[in-house]
Image (cartoon, rainbow, N blue to C red; front, side, top):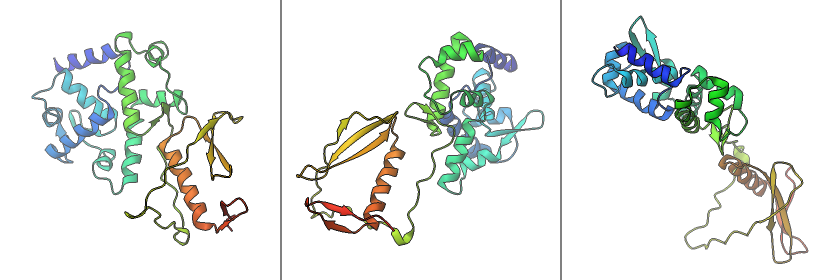
Length: 266
């Protein structure tokens, strides 16, 4: 009966896809580890660890999602155990390993890997449910749910930023050599914080970018910077890092206009 319920769940969704999003799967993985550890366990035991009293359509869908994302390996005909990928997610040795493992998990489902191949590097279309039906064989009555589970899973993995589906996880921030480290320039409690200059947006000839004009002083000196569109928080952090680097390696002085000058780094 449980197998028939599981087959019906698959038929209602069309192609085999996770019935739970990645964030929920990670939470369920923690529950399984707390209940059964890293040893082999039956499907019934895994279902109870996930909070279900028996195997049924719902618990089978949860177990299938853990398998789809690569968190459970089959061990024999009817047993399962937490995979090496699951262990890296549960017990990472550093933040980078966890980030890379989550990014790997979101591409483990064969159906999701096809979506990454199709849309990677591009904005996910608003009509994604329609495309899933026409190009990927998803049934119309489940396409909205399949699309939402995929979107939320990619976002949780950090692979959907500003609506654009990424092909690689966000890289680690570049580091500045110790000899060029930037001193802490945050204001002390007795030092007031200056109000930031107002950025004036103008047209730019650079395709896919937005130009910002930054007033530097009262004499009318300006600086301009072209930033890509869409712009992520990581992009802004890199711009700030570069500006801090330039401030650290440059010599300040006064020019005829009364502003600061920055020498080119050697």
